[in-house]
Image (cartoon, rainbow, N blue to C red; front, side):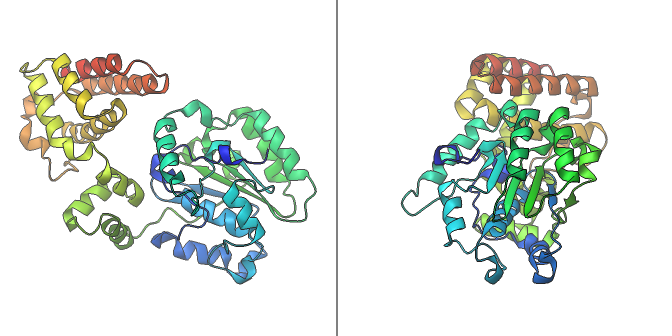
Length: 374
């Protein structure tokens, strides 16, 4: 199951897959983990199975793909900071045809831009945006693991690497099939698992892998990175709010600030209040928003606003300092927890509609009617 250029397209979490590269620089908060892992005195004892776990937007996939390139690099002994980028192995990675690399799901492979094909990144970004909600394609089944086991046990003169992206979406059969491979490590074989939801991994899987120390991100490094990525045009308060809304994940914070819906939070609140007061119809509001945002973007905006509404209903402070929901909405106007739970179910239905390519207007109208009743 070697890769081909046509298969070499990133898919999955747009927060972590956008701009992925085997040779991208380390993120600032990953320097220490990289040094510990690749130090000459530690290379001989490098664990055969590693787990990169944590919320979306912390950069774990960037770290894993960089590690993959370094493990396979023919000149890694003289390049401790990352793959050399010019050896035969690195060229194979660039072309998407490395014989010693296997990835599940296959479309999780990063797309490597070249000087001859500078537009590949933008194409991958469009593909990522289109496919990121297609959860069924991420499922790793038992047959996938069985095919990979033959790769693990085949003879090879070099290092072999297997990457399991969205490892939490392995079926029970797939996870059990993988267990034997984890329990019986093969020489020169490295298994790298990636998950956004470590709690969903089988305990037997987690007990047989060593977790990479990637989850602790110092606040100063996170805020500095966000400022740099946003061109230094945001205040300290804005950066702090973004990081808080992103649950401390810097890449997610940058993606949020750049999202077309983020600047429309106050408009969402105004429209919601108008709907609640009966001053605007749900269909009129739906028509308005369809001109402004895609259904996926509007769903993200709605979920963010509901986080704060939920917090206020529970007596907690708002996370948004520049969009004061508590001040704008009288206490008696706040929805009940039951109404918020019902809206959450409709949002989940809206996400499924996006996956199933249901006509967007119908799903939009249904979601807006539910928002009006909340």
